[in-house]
Picture 1 (cartoon, helix red, strand yellow):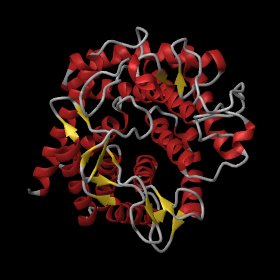
Picture 2: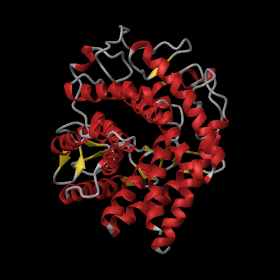
Picture 3: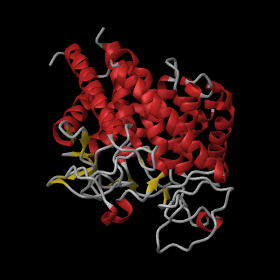
Picture 4: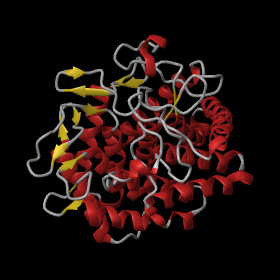
Amino acid sequence: MATNGFFEQARQTYDTANASCLNWMLDRAALKGVFLNTKVNSITGLNYTDADERRGPDWLYGWIQGRGLEALCAHSVYFQTQFPGLGLRSNQRAQALYKAIGHLVEKTGHAYFCYDKNMQPAWSNDKVHVSPDPSIYTYSDAFCAKGLVAAAAQHDVGNLSHHLSYLARVIQSVEDGFFQMDETAPPHPSNLLNQKRSFGPYMILLGAAGLLKNVGHSTEADFAYRFIDIVLKRHLDLESYLLCDVEKEDECNPGHAIEFVGFALEFLPHDADPALVKTLEKILLNSFEKGFKKPGICLSLSIQTGLSLSPNCPWWSLPETIRAAALLYERTQSSKVLEVWKTAHQAFFELYWQQPKSMAYQTMTSQGPVDFVPATPDLDPGYHTGLSLLCASKVAAQLSM
């Protein structure tokens, strides 16, 4: 396929997939009257029920709701011109979800990974139950703070500074060592003692930098330069150009490394340091080359040997690759980067994406789909898939002109 033909076809494919997923999600009955409901088995297409325990409708995941709010806000703007009805529905649902998440966070000053049927924070049964420490923040705080900022910028500018402060506290907690990565236990100082130095929090919060730029708060996004520098100094293996998950250890999640590249490129100005862009290109190319083991990108691999440490290939790393490659190709016009984009595109839409169901298989191996939950049992609410494809669609539209 000619390059221009690929860009146009890619744009149409991404927009169709996102609109389909969004319509599916908005058509489903809300949880507790307002929260997003993506509680479906991606293999069977059947709804989870109370018999599925923590996969079922009694359990609400803060991660998912925060991610979904950010995604709804972005899609509502984009689809206003193409599909006005869908844009309006997304906007209305975002406003309602914004209020619900805001109320949830106001209760304690935090969002939590999981809530029980009484909307009380819940952790794994085998963890010691102690009161969560309000000075400690988590990934759920990060995702909900991002969603609240995105929504307030559109619907409630008067309270935007309040949510910006929440996001700033989450960012500061990463720098000060008060960010807990393990959300199976309540946030507590004892859980920070043996916590290894992962680049995960830096990568996830780096995603907030592009959002802050988009809502007109570029100054608050300057932390991103520090976060990029920390990840490259502490986690980049200069021989393989892979990122070690934990400083000085061997394991690499290539999908997370690629996600880091995409978030960095969304934030960096077009006149960014060419040497930095080249480093990001090497990380993308090497992470994909070593991590792509059909049908997708393996969950983890050894930096020393390059061998997979898990047979599981989650869905999310392919759309993240599409975004990172699109943004990088826009800057470099590299044929190698374009090939990564095309390969990830083909793998995702031929092997993972189920058009009749408007969803992707959550996890696959070389043997096909498997019932393995990457992080939460709820399906992606337009975040990994939707926001990645939305970004790539915009790039493709520019490149096809």
